Length: 61
Image (cartoon, rainbow, N blue to C red; front, side, top):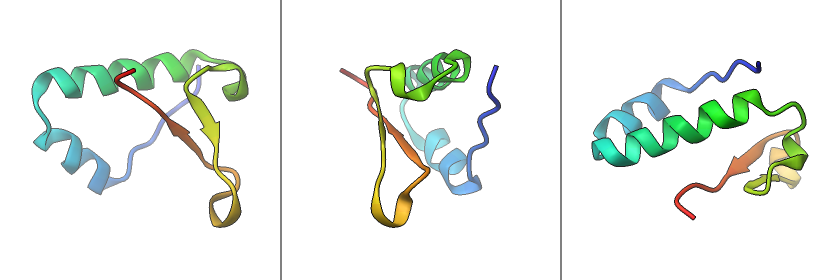
């Protein structure tokens, strides 16, 4: 299982969200922590340019 670390600002932002949205995001993060290859997940895209090596996750689809 992959370890996911959130920036302190991301944690603060997450705490300000409605509880149902918080739960949705936490569930999505737990799901991708279990994925072996991020490229195989349908809602994860690799970023390019300055953010090469980083990924985005689409939630709420």
